[in-house]
Image (tube, rainbow, N blue to C red; front, side, top):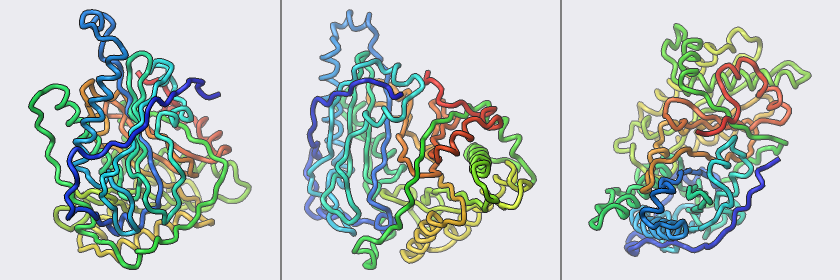
Amino acid sequence: MGLEVKVEVLHKENISPSSPSPHPLRFFSLSVFDQLTPTVYFPLLLFYPNTVQPRDRELNSIDPQSLVVERTKLLKTSLSETLTRFYPFAGRIHDHASICCNDQGAVFVEAKVKCSISRVLEEPDLEFLTELIPKLESTDEGETGYVLLNVQVNFFECGGIAIGFNVSHKMIDAFTLSTFVNSWAATSLGFGTSDHTVFPSHQYVGAASRFPPLDLFKSPPQFGKLAKEKCITKRFVYESSKIAYLKSEAASDAVPNPTRVEVVSALIWKTAMKASSENSDSVRPSSTWLQIVNMRNILAQPSGKNLMGNLLGFFAARSTGGGESKDDLQGLVAAMRKGSEEFKVKYGTKFVSGEDVSKLMNEYWEQMQKDDIECYCSTSWCRFPFCEADFGWGKPLMSVPATVELKNLIMLMDTSDGGGVEARLTLKEEDMAKFEKNEELLAFASLNPTVT
């Protein structure tokens, strides 16, 4: 049963940049990466506890409603200022090659949650968490004029806050979003602590400056439709101490020092394959792990590290499918490392053209739609500094994306201490029933623990 708590929307408005976008910047080019990204939205949630204690409230005569008014004003003012630096976020999709930077603004929703923040973070209900994220009107591929950035600020009865984001993947990836969120937080922190605010410096340079749009895709490319199946998403947390032991188990001559993302991914992959095999009447087919990659640190092109927009690629790792000798933790980690190193050689040692990007993304969609291979797709937000975003009342207690229920989708991110990994997995219901009871998995992971 879901968490039965009412979320009441109090106000909704558009927040425009504090200064008009210059006319020469009226149209912002999408990159070829953006063109080849489907028109979908992805969410993020940042939770902040109440930092004003009851005794302080009495001493400072701060009543809860005044605090809500004060913080809402601060967030709106600082968002408006931040949008002058991230001016495309306040625009609208013009066509499949550009954004019209018309300053129509980001959607800002203020909501009230009729419970304490601790109740929501106690064994978090993933279905309820979607209530804390801005609702969207349906957006079809090829449609224009839609909002790129949607924000919902949720105030809890205890004084805690959750800031929910729903952003267009058409021009924003996790790196771009984390850069924006931290810039907004720094601006808010400056407004709240100084009369002479020095805004964080940021020059918005889009990926199109290195990877311009292709005329071939001025009309939207046709993305294959993925089969809909009855799936369920669950949350697993791997503590840093357990990951250290898992690394020792997964280390081999081929990969003596595996990363935490590699070992957690390998354990998930191994367990998911076993669950799928137990639910199948036929011999288990070969399996592919598709790892989404932030290409900023890989591309040979200069000055690519701070480009905004989508700069995502992928590499594939493959299991043997014939037996378990090479599909143990060591074998799967070695397969992932091999895929990663080959990808770096292919795209990190030469100039990458728009045609190369097009070919890469076509390969991704072809892999996703193969019927004869069990395909798992993983994206990692580890090391993106979402948990550093301090708006003036401390760093977030927890950041939680509510995952789209797409079969065999895995999403990894840092735990609040920065050393563990939180995973959200979407599997077929019958596979999840086997997966969540796997003893090897549960020796390293906790199923939806309470956040403290």
